Image 1 (cartoon, rainbow, N blue to C red):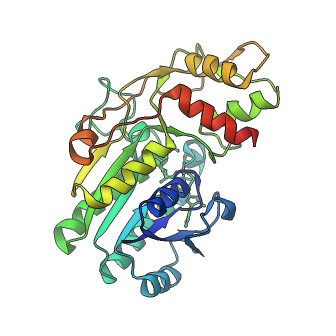
Image 2 (tube, rainbow, N blue to C red):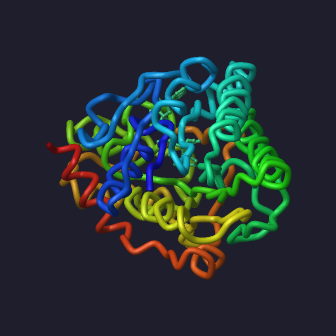
Length: 305
Ligand SMILES: NC(=O)c1ccc[n+]([C@@H]2O[C@H](COP(=O)([O-])OP(=O)(O)OC[C@H]3O[C@@H](n4cnc5c(N)ncnc54)[C@H](O)[C@@H]3O)[C@@H](O)[C@H]2O)c1
């Protein structure tokens, strides 16, 4: 199948590109390279440096390539930046996605797989693990913008017959994650620990997150091409791992010599967040297979090289 991956030069998107190619698909990438890197893109995929908000340029790519499906990963994805630039987050994440959907409709795309976020749409969870029925309470413009698109997907399926699968990701980690970004504690600490530089645990470190290896997330995207349709699916492990546990595992894997130092807690941070995996198992036949210890090994090996 020919698949267009938006954001395919980014962290998660580039792993999806690799997984699609491994499964025999033909892959086209659209990325404006704002945070993504050309070097992340598999040489067997065709990269178009295009902004998803640019209707004309995106139209030309769809006319030329005629993809049957789209894996839509491109987004502004920095929670803190979204608090100071909410309009930009709406422009890229909502209007950019709508632009893509309109063009998908015009060019006869069959299915869209959409990267949503379990971490940001549920807010402070009312129960754990949060399932797909959990109330939607985004705490920031990033989460609000990512959630809006889920509604448009429903509308485009109902009225225009474009199928979709919404995948709500947990905290994804692994090779190619940007260590300079604000998100991604594993990438940030791995880079610092390998350089022997100081690290800070914000607050008690007992806050919990749901860490899933990027290869598992990429595999779910490939499965969603053929299975299911019209659903919202969490891609969680259903396990909360504390930040202290992550620190200890990473310290062991990197051989980091400095002690764990704690700083002030981050304001407004959700304390515990992890999401279900049952629906992914029943619809996609998916469950995470890479343990945190194994995934950290892979991540550290990547950062070392
Ligand atoms: N990393 C996580 O833990 C996580 C969790 C939940 C959801 N997500 C979602 O997964 C997707 C991928 O995130 P990531 O962590 O790989 O981030 P990333 O920044 O590495 O990837 C995003 C990609 O989109 C591209 N992009 C941004 N704006 C664009 C635009 N206007 N036009 C074209 N391309 C544009 C960037 O250059 C980049 O390559 C995002 O949609 C994000 O919201 C990520």
